[in-house]
Length: 456
Image 1 (cartoon, rainbow, N blue to C red):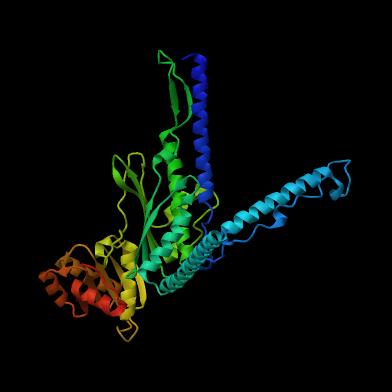
Image 2: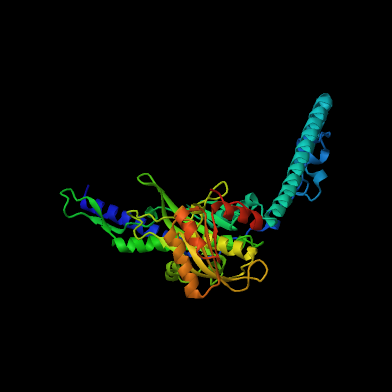
């Protein structure tokens, strides 16, 4: 390969890399725009009959289809067609052709009429089927809409997935998503399949190698931190666009929160979680999810309860806040935000509506609540609810008793999704105002007051 040829090839590679970078900029711009809203009326279909096929009608040949055009006489000829020899010749030929067609039609008239009748009947049958299909679809759409308005999980999931499909359908890039809706916590758990790091060009320029004896083509690598920054910028844009699409689709306010897990699938590592968000309603509505400036997108994402990889090229996976479940969710499958929201809703329904969560973590929460004077006395209560460890020990119970003294609370509740060690039960017995609720009783209370099931 000549030096000139190598230089031209390096330039071509550079142009391809620059085009890929420009494409990335276009994707970032598109992801910054709100996605189309899910509109049930727009999903309706209309039936429009198709025209009857010409072969569905059998009629004798018409003279008008054979008659020559008298208005196109050559220049200089008489304006009276009947006096023009060429026109007379064409007219005679047309009459012969018309008569021949009439004879052929009369000879095959029965066959032609039968054939036309078959075509007409087939046309009418197909049109009835088309009309019935449109009517059935619109009826299902009405049922689907009512199911969504009633909060049926399958319908809510379907609406959310439709919204995410529209949000993730960018020119040249598809971002698939799966949705699981948990009625227990009114939370959508989204698995978002992110594009791999290959979407960011690793080099923007190519050159002829000076080290290669044959003068090969080599890339001019981009700084690793620049590639990471560009990739995480796109990831932030796609995650925020997905959250915005779900919020926009929640026209019936079924959602109290969203758990979004951004995953990448590679041949080497399989499916890896690079991003996890645990956002409650107040997080999602605090401010716009789609900042105008691209540089603001990662910061806006991190303002939400968020875990994001530090190195997508390694990759360095993160632990999801929560995971989806096809059945009643286990306590450990709930995100911290979900678990805290479940506790607040349950105890509010039981008679502790004035809720102040002091500590919220992976294993549970600590809150101060005031009773409504009916279900609970109106004085302060210390409430501790945990899902880990599975067996609560004596020391943990005594710690809550100390918090009661510090907060000058007259009563306390120690609830767990697991069980209490016998020594913990004895320690609680020393404090008459400290109530223990184990996993069995907690699940029964959730069933009674919330009408839902907690697995385990």
